[in-house]
Image (tube, rainbow, N blue to C red):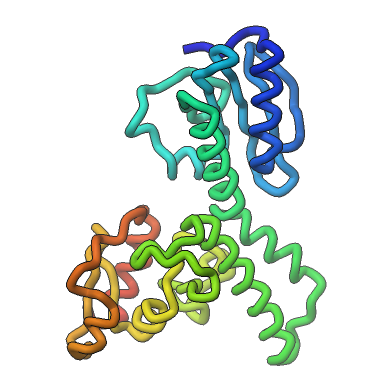
Length: 253
């Protein structure tokens, strides 16, 4: 499956529009039918191609972390300029993929860490008050990254109201380096009730996403958490599991 070469007017127009509307606004040229774009806020490049003005649409990416997250389990390998190349039958499918790729690019290591370092580079850290300001900046960046990574949705309850969502560290902030504190694989975007339960070690998760509940939880608390009807937590990666293993040990699961 190859892109139209040279790309026609419709392909060029639709590719530019799709890239622009999803955060990739820097045009990097055309080669072999592929239109390359990058972003001022997201690392890496993307390439878009169209087999015709009506599709299918091809998308290639060079961000190794994003390529690993998305994988190729549902598609046959396609040749392209990036590390991973995907095919989409329609433009809405392409837009959805670009939105996901952009959000992963700005949330995966080490993008949040770099934003934190830039934001705090000139801030003093002598007094406790100054250190708390730096910590708050880091926590805000971490929350934003988790919102992007988890798509603004609690993976346990499905809640999407931002006011009800919390950035939950798996390994506590105090026990981490800056790299670990800003790593989205050391966090879950949980609803407020689940965040409180997780933070206090009243619930945890197995490597396959199965919810684990402490024997300290009473019947009412179990009902409030909906423990009897919850599906497994999906989307866990190897790095999540490594951190969750520490959470389970620390809280006696």
